[in-house]
Amino acid sequence: LFIMPGSSKEANVGELQHTTRGCALKNQECCVPPTECRRGAYQGLRWYYALNEDDCTTFRLNANCGQEDKLFANCTACMMHCKGLTLIEAKTRCFENSEEESS
Image (cartoon, rainbow, N blue to C red):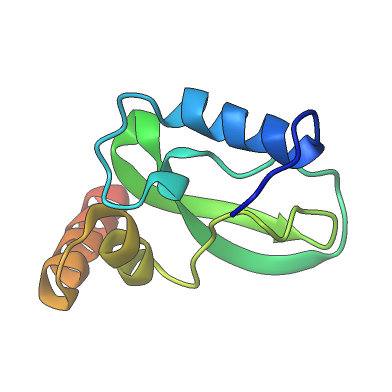
């Protein structure tokens, strides 16, 4: 991958490296929170990894949201990709989290 010095891609890479410093996740792109987006047509909930909570959580996806963000269709996919959990571990963790929220 070649990035032109001074380009917006270079700024994004620098920002990613700064944001992910100290992040011990399997995939570093999970360390960057989704971009705040303006109101737009609701497109459903997606999941992202919330570094400060050390957990996957929901994100309201609108038509005006950045499509390059690392968002997942469900908690299990987020846990498997970002935490490196197996399918069974991810499902267990997501189920435990949903039980805590409902009590």
